[in-house]
Amino acid sequence: MDGVLVNSEPVIRACAQETAKGLGFSITDETYVSWMGLPSAQLRHAIGSSMGPKFPMEEFYEGYKNRWREKLKAKEILANPGIPSLLKQLHSLLIPMAVATSTESGQALETLRTTELLNYFDVVVGGNDVKNGKPAPDIFKSAAEAINVSPNQCLALEDSEIGVRSAVSAGTHVIMIPDLIEPSSELRKLPNHVVASTVDASRLVIKLIKCEME
Image (tube, rainbow, N blue to C red; front, side, top):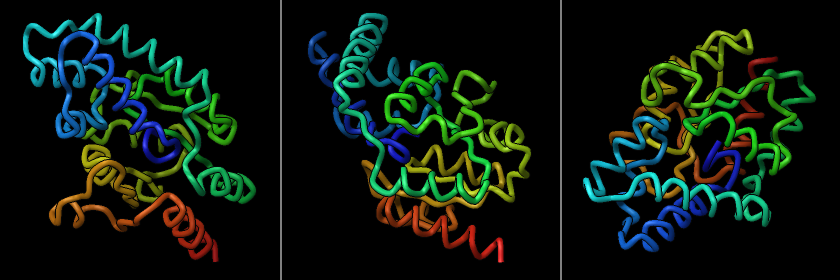
């Protein structure tokens, strides 16, 4: 969801950095990128490891959530280019769709509802809905099961290394759209495709789906 369906990653990063700054701490871009895609429990551990034992975790989370809600309310979170059109086309073709996100399901539903994307999806699987979060394959397998499609018949769109590794491990056909950081040469070998934008990804998805249907 974040970074693929919606333009949330830069906003999430800004919320985290501004909140930490208000508490007397600094989160670098490199540190933030290392957290991308992690489910909630692992994210807390990663933040603690990066920021040290004196970091006020609960104050940080409360401040971050307040800033995030303000951004949502102000309509600063939008669908990424090409995504609404893609979802409409897939919906018209009766293609089942699921969201598999490390974000907790409640927050994911709120984001998708605010960006007017929620009604396109048959199910939303959040990081709190599976035992093992990304990069384990559980979340993609769970999403595939929920729409009654084998993982090896699914297309997965991902922007982060953790997400790509999760989707590849689940056996899906993976399209990567790098968001805040360019993938390494090693990471580029994992997904089936690496494209430059969500517009390019949308065109590729339709092409692959139509080829499969012919």
